[in-house]
Length: 231
Image 1 (cartoon, rainbow, N blue to C red):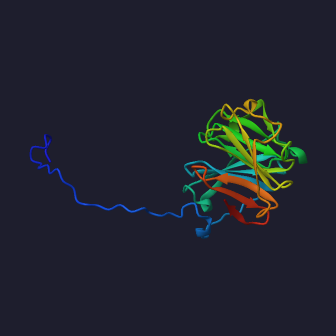
Image 2 (image 1 turned 180 degrees about the vertical axis):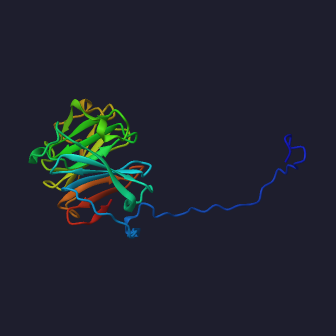
């Protein structure tokens, strides 16, 4: 075809085509197989794991030391290519004594905000340089008390727009949901009681973490002895 399409003959017709619905098992945990890749690190009671969206870094939270550690992957998403990068020790809200020990973590997509929970609440930290944990600082007063619903919170997760937060713990074996009128703003939520809850006890009496698929239609719960449950 030339620049003016003068040598192109247009036909106002198209071949008959039938489109059929495809199927995918991308979020079906029953289809998972071991990739035969691993790496051994000297973590002290690891309690959380998070990957940078491009797969070039992962972050591990340690309960006993109140540290978060950053590892670089020379091949994205391949944990066997990881090497230690840096670490940060929490001194505010998260600590080494039992009630304040870190239990889990959550980064926003931009890598500029980090949330870490202990057994009764979630605290907020900012990163002045995205994904660089050496630039972490605590947001003064920015924490949310979950202890009125669950006194041994283990894992939590945010709705992507920050208007809902979810948490699970080992006392009540329940998933809890809190609402925020302004996304990611703890001051706009009700700490007195969770706004919704769902019992997990039929499958898990000791849930440790909670996550959702991208559109929020599937929920995944990890259990203390290993299983992952899909809802």
